[in-house]
Length: 88
Image 1 (cartoon, rainbow, N blue to C red):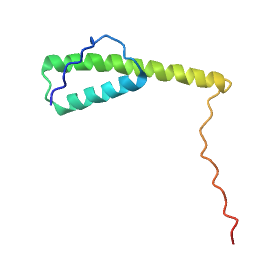
Image 2 (image 1 turned 90 degrees about the vertical axis):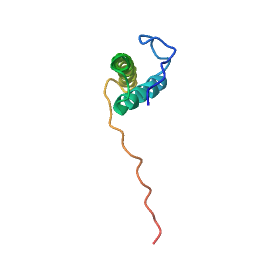
Image 3 (image 1 turned 90 degrees about the horizontal axis):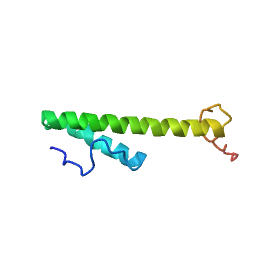
Image 4 (image 1 turned 135 degrees about the horizontal axis):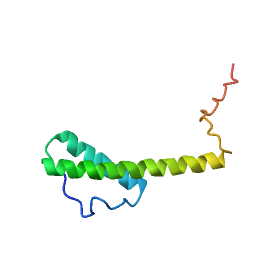
């Protein structure tokens, strides 16, 4: 099923990471569906590339902020220790 053309230009930056990710998922689904014209496929690819770069940039910025907060060293997330059952 072809994707409806969005009202935003292909080079317009997304409003948020979440919006960019949702739009990127729609583009991937449309392209995987194989029902886009060649021109629409190219336009979708260009828009997807812009969205991907936007998302990567946002994630890198957040990672840098976390590194600053953690003293320049990323720490692995550890699961909460399970409480031991003292019942016998």
